[in-house]
Length: 157
Image 1: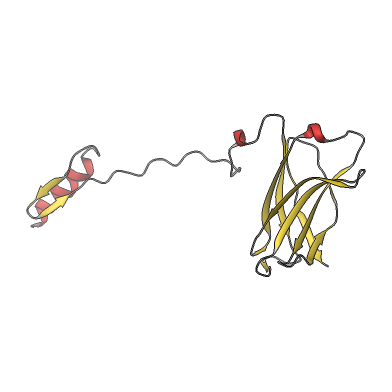
Image 2 (image 1 turned 45 degrees about the horizontal axis):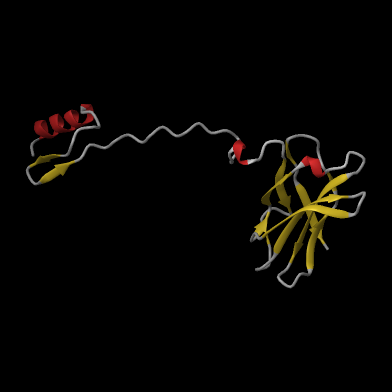
């Protein structure tokens, strides 16, 4: 193919609407390339706000270790809990595994279950596959708000 024909061909394809069908020239089939769709607008949130039931509250953040990238033993379980310090019981427990710290968590709860005269905290523990506690956190006061961020640092036992 000579230079002038290839220039016309490239120019013609670049100006052609993306709805054109394939074109066959000689033994070559040309298919117009559609530009990628515009990426949806994103926010700082990595989830859909409608995924949390109306009236519920959310606490999310990261369980952090003594150092970034701390590898956990295989089979370790992380448990983040919403605890009632006054009644000494747990209202919400979420358990998950992760190969390293820091790792994100999200806890959703119904504030109707909270007693205004009690004190509440978020607590994290990390146990190996046999259940032996490897890391634990101090109680972090439950912040007020519908959607709050609370990082929970753990230390070695």
